[in-house]
Image 1 (cartoon, rainbow, N blue to C red):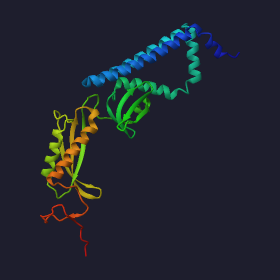
Image 2: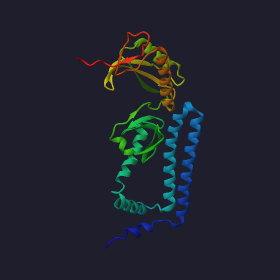
Image 3: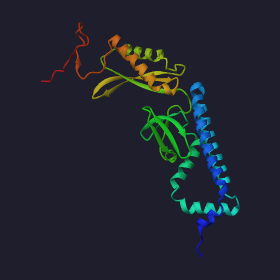
Image 4: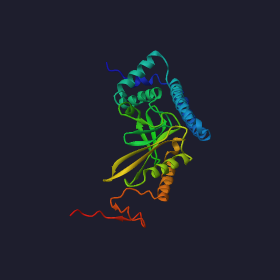
Length: 285
């Protein structure tokens, strides 16, 4: 005898509860939207607590969605043992395989929530993208790049691929800025310029250690001296502002002190009257 699975399911549906169930889902969606907007406003007002607010909001959104869906199910279905068995069996047979990826993402979302490889507000690099985590949902994670593109990544991807977090829940983050000068330039002058640019920038968090690493490298097919400045930014949202500010200050300092960038052409250093004059390298006979 063939079993009418659809009929078995429909007999457990509470028709009078469909409208209350839909209202429950609507109220849940409105509540989640209100919570998200309130969190954004609180984060902007209390900057030092911004990441904590967003992290608490993520947990609250999970709880509200779970509660709203559960209430909707209670309204829409009769909660007898037979009903749960019938509905559960139908869902498992009908959509189990089709929902495999979604289920994996949902489970991964819960794992991310408790394992916390990154948090809302973190600057992360993943699969060639770099930006700030704006939302951690059950199904996906949203990342906003520095050029304001929103990238939606299924949660299960984070369980199989490496992800790099720059600040790991903290407001400050280490930023690296490279400067290149010619190998015939005054290294001490260049280092002083970069140091002054770092410690005078309003975006630098100099309470944490900062440093300038000097090395000789091949840059664009010619030898150069690289000064790699490493300094913490006060707030991750000022990352690019710090990089711009320090770069502008350093370039101005290089110009004022006569520190030149690398050059493919040979500098005639002996000509005092025009120290910046460049002459071509003479071909070997």
